[in-house]
Amino acid sequence: MSIQWFPGHMAKARRLLLEQLRWVDAVIELGDARLPESSLNPMLRELLAGKLKLLVLNKSDLADNTWTERWLERLGQEGLVFPVSATAGSGVGRIIPQLESLVRGKQEQLAARGVRARPLRVMVVGIPNIGKSSLINQLTGGARAKTGNKPGVTRGNQWVRINPRVELLDTPGLLWPKFDDPEAGRKLAAVGSIKDEVVDSEELALWLIEWLQKNYPTSLERYRCGQEKLSLEDIGRVRGCLVQGGRVDTLKAAQIFFKEFRAGLLGKVTMDKF
Image (cartoon, rainbow, N blue to C red; front, side, top):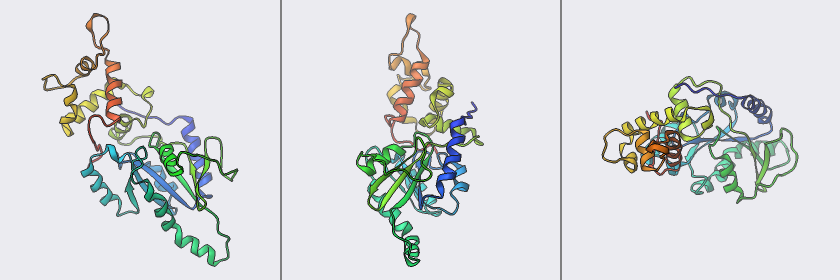
């Protein structure tokens, strides 16, 4: 199954990001701790070149702890990175101090040149459904107050004041035009970063079942009825997805399967490995 998805609003989001980058001092890039490599937009590496950046692996509560530690060590060789759970709030308190430390040198240089101090401006970027809104709500205590009109702000983007010293610019989720690695596209679809409407849910579910059977076989125990190989029909029977004649609604079974997988009900999983 090949997944390619880059609608018009994605191209627009890319243009806006380029326009707005000149107004910010630093960038928070959100990745998915379950996909520390596949969830990082390769376009951003080029677009953000030269910008101070903090990499935050969100949804760490859903990821395999052992692999999270390995990825932190690997990605940490390129810059600042740490895990958080924006829904639970764990690790979020480290972000603002890290940002302030990251840009302190730049601010001191500006102060030495007589430039008047202003709040630190930070752009939040990442792919769709990565948890940007949840993170910003945690940082603001749920109060997403606009701080007034500023250059680069357009519909769907707003400055959010965290405290008198820091303002965040929320941005739309941004994917890239083509997945060179088909498996990366399948992984992103499996965790919900690509809309279910543009993929074959049943085909994708069969791929994910096979992947889990190979990598996390115990994660599927909740659906087993003694059989060795699991199918969508098996999941549908366990979850009561029956239609007239006792047949299984496999589409509904796939939808339930993805919902439970994404909620972490099948256990902690990391899909990117090395």
